Image (cartoon, rainbow over all chains, first blue to last red; front, side, top):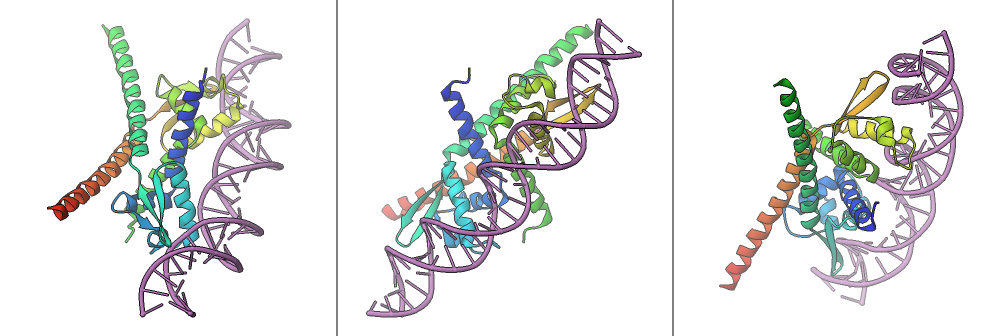
Amino acid sequence: MSRPRIRAELEARASVFAALGDETRLLLVGKLSNGLPQSISRLAEGSALTRQAIAKHLRVLERAGLVRGMRAGRESRFAFTPEPFKEAQSYLERVSSQWDDVLARLKFFVEDEES
Amino acid sequence: MSRPRIRAELEARASVFAALGDETRLLLVGKLSNGLPQSISRLAEGSALTRQAIAKHLRVLERAGLVRGMRAGRESRFAFTPEPFKEAQSYLERVSSQWDDVLARLKFFVEDEES
DNA sequence: CCCATACGCAACCTCCTGGTTGTGTATTGA
DNA sequence: TCAATACACAACCAGGAGGTTGCGTATGGG
């Protein structure tokens, strides 16, 4: 059991959710999902945190694949990456519908007992 | 800016994602989404971790609202809670479609330049 | 050409997380 | 009734996460 394929997917999924599990990073995702690639300094504007802190958060998002960084001259810009979001969404959808199925079967069983 | 309402939603969302950002907890979610409420010992069966470790993970899931624990005699059973999953899913959907809109507007702009 | 800008890297700190062990308590079943 | 079961609570530990400061380096505009 627990084939490498499954383990790898589990690990990737956990790292995506972990990356999203921080308020600062959710705000960054909000900014990036909302427009074109932006530099670190730009993303740090208006934040209470330092530029280095923001840079660290961006690296976390990048390692999880949620964001893609590229150097452009003296600044490095980060862009939103939609795929992992869709993957995570489809996982949540599967979990929810799995639960719905359980409820449906339970309801059927209970109604069966009542008759 | 940053009204309390928004802050609270942000915090709740982050805690949900953070709770999902761990392989052990993803496995627990998998088990619970898949059947009826189960006791801690039951959920710890077959795991390399101790029962106490599993209990801690369940508390994390519970604090995030992903799971609901209830005492039944000498055992405490944990049940799947679908709402936060649907909420998280709809958030991811909003982020993705926001990005799609950005791309659409960009495409329009580029095609406009070409003409 | 030169200074301000935008970084990266590294050391360092604190606090939280994931995990264990140990102990005490309630519940259950024989 | 009494031992095994199932748990909660607490102390403790190592390591990682989030954050800062300091410093060195490349890039770009005036």
